[in-house]
Length: 394
Ligand SMILES: *Cc1c(COP(=O)(O)O)cnc(C)c1O
Image (cartoon, rainbow, N blue to C red; front, top):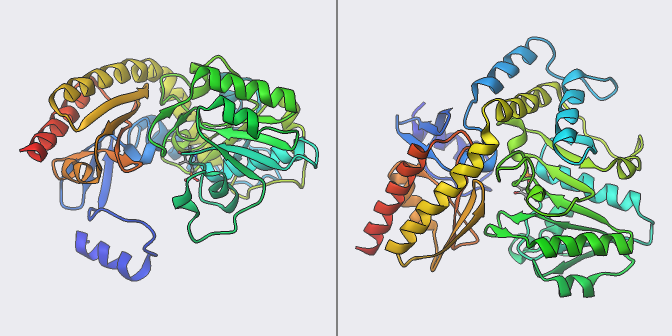
């Protein structure tokens, strides 16, 4: 099929709810994508943070082949090995909680919100979330997402959600009451522009939740599974949440989401209260196990931390040369470049030059290189961005 033939299929048969770039990607390997016209693209935003250990990681592909030959899916009427194994690996790398599996980040957050309501008393129905957040597109999670642009056309939203400015402890304190079931925030806001939570802020959330009998939920859908150089974003801070949610990188490219809760809270999720038909699917969980093993065997946490420093350093060098760059921020391989103006054109020009990056919140270039990347890949990306910025200025 030619690129145009594929685009024609989409025009006729696929709902046009995404603004797509006119490329058909047919293959991915490690840090690179290949399109139907034979172009090779260096991918510094693989799969929107999903393909965090690179495209088609051989260990994940092999695990999928093995599992596919045994059992693709069994419903949760039964036990299955990959689900148990993955839950153990995740629990040991976080705070020793128990897992519920689903298929996406939004579903993981839905599960967390429902569990918080179940676990606390019925008078507690409020959720506090932060401005600039992103938690998903289902009705509850889009309501939790405190950005008006995601709410347009869907009013009235779910009741009970209270929005506070991110990283503002005083605002949080005044929003709190004994009606609050949970606080839900990202340790580093992703779609909101790579905004890092303050240590003190997260500790204030912890304290206020404890004082008011509320549940502290951290959305680790983007920060989780090694992206920041630690297994979970919260591990950079002096705080332990009650619930974390994850998805994106967890399946190495296969759809999976998970919620992990402390034992005592997890116990409130009894049969009949929540479920997912595909949740804990054998194939997806086998992929998750392989992702965690690959990260460990190939020392990818260390690489993410080191390469993140290197990338930030290189971007700061670019800042010296290009006044359009205002600042650089991030942890590990979750990096935002704050521009003085919109970034969409820069992203498009980078792609034309063989580099994929992303722009979020209009003015923040987002670099999320795969954790398997080497310095040479970063150098190549920086060179392309440098060229694009030069052309822009010239
Ligand atoms: C992507 C994302 C979600 C939503 O995940 P989906 O799999 O698209 O439902 C939720 N929270 C955060 C922080 C995300 O980055």
